[in-house]
Image (cartoon, rainbow over the protein chains, first blue to last red):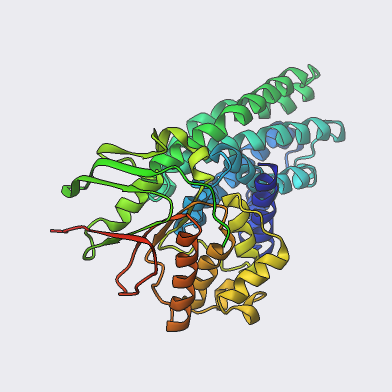
Length: 222
Length: 215
């Protein structure tokens, strides 16, 4: 079981490395969207500082959604998904490995470059920790929830639009709490309450989402 | 040749399959024991692939069930799948990975033990000795099929093989090789269910055939 887990993570990272344009698209999208806001809003430091965390979070959310439809699509098209379903390892474990690998290539880069982008919003240096931590806890939740939507819409025509409609409402609580963490820290309240909530959501999502995804995949493949 | 212990029998009981508006088959039953070969025949669109997918537990039949050792395969789940090798009509290869990497990953997923040496030997057996480090993207259709079928050479521990059109796109030498692998598995005491349009006869003590009528 561990061998299969490691194998799937390694495989997906290897595939991402050999086909890096997919990863670059997500990161570039994030960078461009975030950079457009200061240009559009104008150089008003106070305003930028207020909207900064929210903009970063919304951009991260949209970027992670951009990559979602590809989590299972390629494996579905070439028959690998069937092999995963008929393997010796429970499908939930395989799904957890796939979502983790997906987050490593599409979520983690966003977390890592967010402090650099936050400079454009004149965000105080001491808030970087909360911002990065909130994104580090929040983006895996987005990947896990999104994977459920991706599994449900697998193989459908117009899956992209349907996927956004399905997944966006579920993203809202994560967005509110995640962006709220930095805002609370900025106002001097400290973001630990929001971070703890995000942590709890991550644990629940990591425990249950892979099994929901596995059930959805079995339905989609029939 | 070493005999694997008697395997539980695969039983299909009163299967019915409806796709869209059409009933592909109904009242279909068969039993497959160790050392038996079952060929599913029938014209295009008669439900051969659907029957194989039902037998694997990928697809739920509209009526009836498939049992492995007396228990429903959809209830046994991994316990059954760990003993099954399924080669579908899709090759399950990643274009960006090499033949050897593809085979290694497929084996790990299927729960087969395969070190590098055995992977290379399996590819060589299917006539891909020179292609093991080429990305699957540059392989021909027949070579891709061979990579998918190279799993057979490593799957002697999986008692049940379900093969969907294994001979498609293969040349005469490769067909001969795959026939040998299937024949070897049956003589070891394993069970094989397969579909094909080729009139390739495979040596087996018990060989049966089900023809789906189509419509």
